[in-house]
Length: 209
Image 1: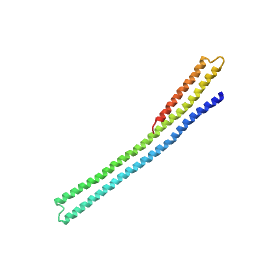
Image 2: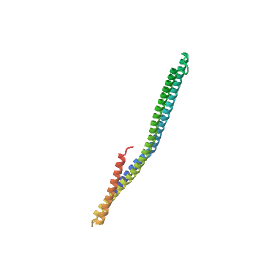
Image 3: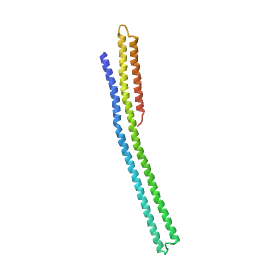
Image 4: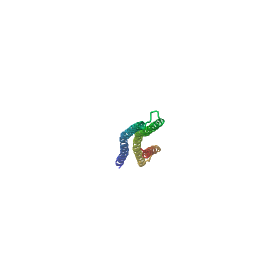
């Protein structure tokens, strides 16, 4: 019976250890995907930023072309009506077209630049979040592995202490004070290790990624 009990304890301790290590391995295996996904998201946002800026440049160029077309029409109308290049009305009209054209051109550029800057910021932030998640999971993996080892050790130590105590009690002359102290020491050490392992597992379960 003692052999069966010891075998059961060993299997139980190994099972706890294997379960914890497998969980840690699964978590560790997911870490590269955090970097890959973050890099893909960052690249997509960077492309969108470049596209937004290029689009605003095209729109600004179109506004400049509209301005030049309006100036050309204004000059043609002025010439057809007999107005000269020094005519005050013609000068004021062309100045107004020039100002409005430059304003709309600048407005297109400003809007595109603002959108591009925002997307570039989001691109950098996405990559940073991926790196932070990768590092945080690395810490969690290390803690999970330590917790698995501590949990298994706690199970084995607890069983060893209990077994030693029962064995000494079964002797005709009973356990000595030293035997009791040793058994209690095993038991207390096992409890400390088990409490530490449980605390580590709770911290890992409470972490958000």
